[in-house]
Length: 202
Image 1 (spheres, rainbow, N blue to C red):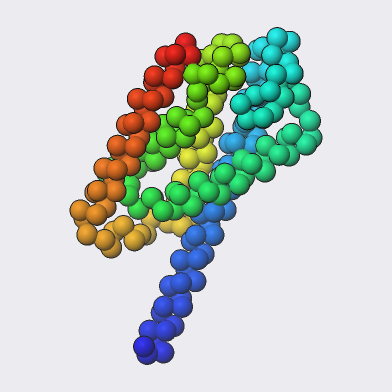
Image 2 (cartoon, rainbow, N blue to C red; image 1 turned 135 degrees about the horizontal axis):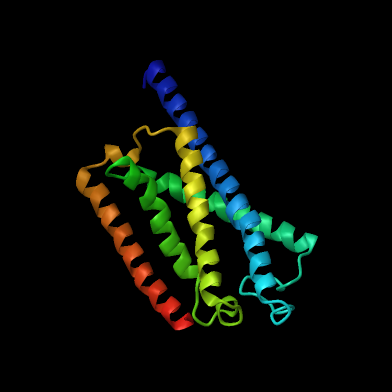
């Protein structure tokens, strides 16, 4: 390998690491805002709607309903940020699979993430959806967390990294389309499960 090739490889590695760090930072900010701050505000709304009947009940996330402590808020912010970092790395891995007109590229990832993550968060036997009224509000607020987080990480990531080619554009087209088909199938399965759970909750 020539010195020029070594320099190019080193520069490429540094740039790749920078973009990975930027994606993690964008995800952390998105998770902190949507999952931490937004999650706390959503809990406040549900607690107000169900006071005093639900006060003191342990939520599905392990928080005591109706009690807003510094420790609980700190833990929620930390969990939101950590999960956001993971989400940012996932976004970085799949962002190159977006296709179609700009509006669809902006909508597809948040929609898919909301379905998949929402399927994991919404349960027909969950305390948050059985005890709290109205249940549709609890479902809507829960789904708004991954939706808001993905919109924010996409906006920040695209601004900070740009829309340059990713590894997916350098792969054979059938490989990328197979990955897109797999993600679409995953979102479809999540949609069916989510609709089933919501129907049971309501």
